[in-house]
Image (cartoon, rainbow over all chains, first blue to last red; front, side, top):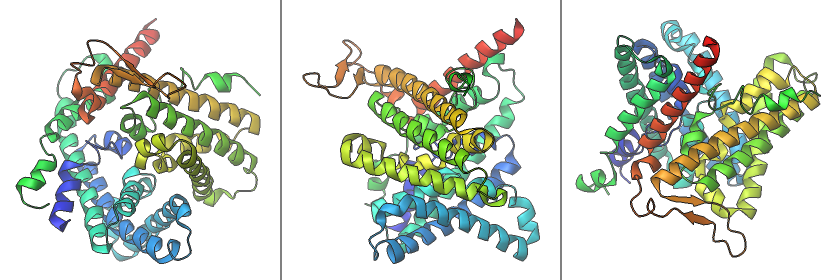
Length: 197
Length: 207
């Protein structure tokens, strides 16, 4: 698969939120206003990119040679938790301004399904190192796209009258469902039409 | 031991509809009833045993590194479930796919460890885990039942003996509403169900 095909697949065709339902908790929880949504999206894209590489290296460098592939789940979650902590420390040291903007979102990312999900999907699909990086970045971008769209929709919904039972989370889910309906327009034939497969 | 710890997870503090935790598997695996039951069984097992172990170790685990410790305990039980399911229920294992290892980052399990197991006795924690797991399984089965009946016109269960495992609903199976088995239908159904529960809660408060 070419890198552009991987990017298109994970940003549009298999969008992590609207098609695969990973990372729904922050999607509903952090999408109340636009700025926090962008912050969460950027922080997540950064972590998925770095952690896909780290998990790939650990899997093929450590687990495969020693025949320990059954420990995959335990090792990956530890790698991700350690990495998030490390990223947090590095950002704090290198760029206090960026830390101030992203700091509060970083601890939340450890338990985000997308980070572990994309690491496992990369191994299952047998991607090489660069494809892994591309899919990690694409997963983060797909999340960012969905959460920014969602935060704009929710800012508009706040100004409109909504029935009491539907206020808050229910109307957010129903808006997400309409977005998912729109994303159904992207499917495998998109790649075929662009001659990428 | 207090029986209330068991029953609260079923309705009053139902993890899916009231606390709204662990949404990813709730929508991802509920295209068929059998997958919902498999995911529910996995969560009941992991939640109960991780709650027992964490509450037993609560005096030993230092406070500042407790979250990584909990995650390792949970990940170990998830690996056990993965191996057992791979060996004995390969069809369910394949259907659950990536969602099975993702039980590790399911917020319900870490949430119960942090909010309940590290403060309460082993017996209470076991009951809490069992109740929360059952509540999760019930909600998952409800969502899967609605989605499969409307979206495919069938109910898929485990095949036993001469029973093939699939109940076909006449009329609906010929012309199903396909969108319910896709992503958009899942999100719509979740929104409507949540609105229904919010309505019930509002009515209770008004009284």
